[in-house]
Image (tube, rainbow, N blue to C red):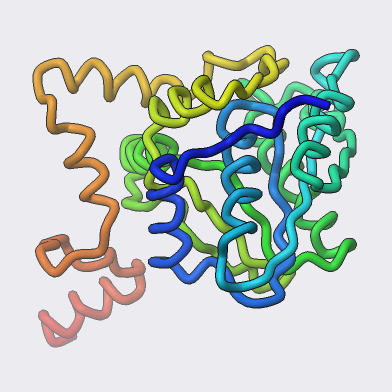
Length: 260
């Protein structure tokens, strides 16, 4: 049996911060980890398994993988073995993303993300889990923030904790304070073996464009990333225009002004 990865306490500092700051854990929680086999989700699995040993509250863990069917030889057994190291049950299902997408839009990325989320939520409800843990890190949050700002004019990104009213599930993002390079470094040091991403669009997405844009702009402004990360926070220093009025409300304002 492979040796269980040992995570030094310093690797978990930012994880404990997010768990405590955003009240992610409660007694009796049943948490389903979204395990893709990538570096982030494998690190999250190892980290939460370590936290489980020391947390002052008791909670259950299991892992769930959605095979998007990009590769006929998806290594499900490797993920099963990885989870077994930590005594975790691993669930695995297939979603034929390309069949669902059927060529709508430039890439199947939106369809893939949507159906993977839906499958994970459904599985969590089916198995009686009340929380889902996803491996989004700080770079993901900043890139999402910039992506929304530049492509839809919205100042938003995903939250550390999101409650889904329809399913009554709570989505956790415990790696929210980790930079991507930290996860790569820590993963290498504890000898994690991430699977190769089988997605044919890997590295050719809008998110990748944001990642490269941040790198380019940071060459002349080294503080750019920190400023973007700070802009995601609610703060008393924000000075933004009021929300745009609906057309009818604006017409009424004009009528009131002209007294007609």
